[in-house]
Image (cartoon, rainbow, N blue to C red; front, side, top):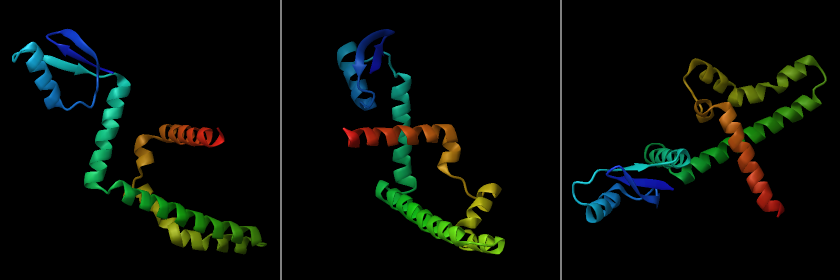
Length: 152
């Protein structure tokens, strides 16, 4: 938990890191005097959590609400699943090189331009900013977490 430090002394070791600043200021003034100086020290994990909450709040304000983001994610997944399924079925049925090349036409039409947009910097994905290793670790942790709950 966060620590509240007043006049260079730790006075509260279990402060909720989401306590509004005005509430902390009022608490310090009422208990330690109007001219007391205070600071809140967060652990690394608390700071990361606060940062994540702040980013999610900004996403909701500036980009889309959670349900809209979920809808876009769902649309993306369905698009990719359908296009990949069509591609795989055509590829499996192909008997010549021309048929193999032809099997890629539909998927190229549907999503082929995305790779070019990423290459030119016109489009960037959050996973690129977050880093592939970090994203893969999140995927693994969430998949294992869900699977553990389902298998208990």
